[in-house]
Image (cartoon, rainbow, N blue to C red; front, side, top):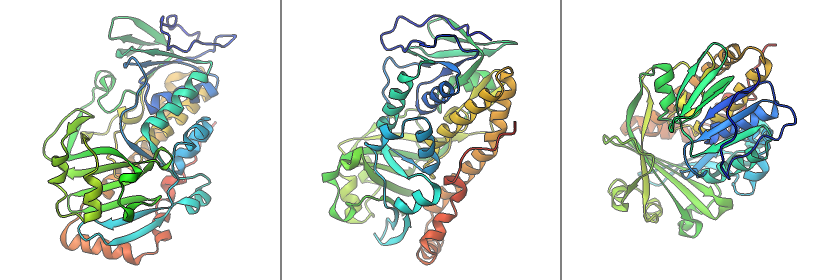
Length: 416
């Protein structure tokens, strides 16, 4: 089918199509975050044109740190973005697990060379802005990708031979498929898939970034630090080529908010960490402000596809952040949906059904593992003591090998 999207907007940020001949397929992508941009790059590499609609007037990724396991760094290499990320990322030597009530080290799980050799790709930690900037640079270099900024897809529809979309200002667009990569609070998920919505998890997260010089000497390591406490945990690691440290703390919290970046006064955090060790309290006292957001999961299992429309990333499967896989799952989605569309050039609905079939089992496994990790992290009393004893007794390599299924992902086997 010949692409039928309207001409590029009169936008200085728009990337025009440079292909000599129009490709046979055009995919509309709602959302210019990690998942949307990765999908556009993957499609272009397979000769498929796309049009990315980003509601913001300029690309600017929020957030602080992101962990990218080998299953994610492999994809960044395949997308041509790895070199752009590498110079700003860090490759931690280990995950250092500590008791946030006593300060005692419980385990030190290998990363660095061990995990890179085991899975053929490194484990990185980075600032989300640096990852996003790398994907923006790559997508602007792809001749088959068109970008419209300040354009929010507010409605969509799967017709018999075309996918239809309209922006919030009333303009209409059409293509062969519509992919909603518009995040946790996806409007298209609600309108296209009759979603039952999100369920508040009873927890919140706060994030901040501090200069490396603000980190106490005891914690000044190229490692992912994971502190465990009853009803809470803290993670911190170097970003920006080791010049800064990203901090995320998660607490039980009954107060629900839908904002991703609610400002929080430093005393809000300080009141919740009075029983933490001095070195950790000193680190958590460094940020002048924190940004808070509530954690959510879907109320019920969600279909990813319907006709010529599909959900991707957090719009399809928000995952609680206890396995550091939310962003990486979006990268996996991107290459799988691009492969499915490339293998079924004349049958978009079938391609999208294949995408859902190939992703649902994997996503369900990651979702369960993440939820289980959260339960383990926040144990108290006798159960926390048993957890700590197991962490101190079992060989570190054996503990990490339990995640071979996660980090060793090379993509699904797609039958011809």
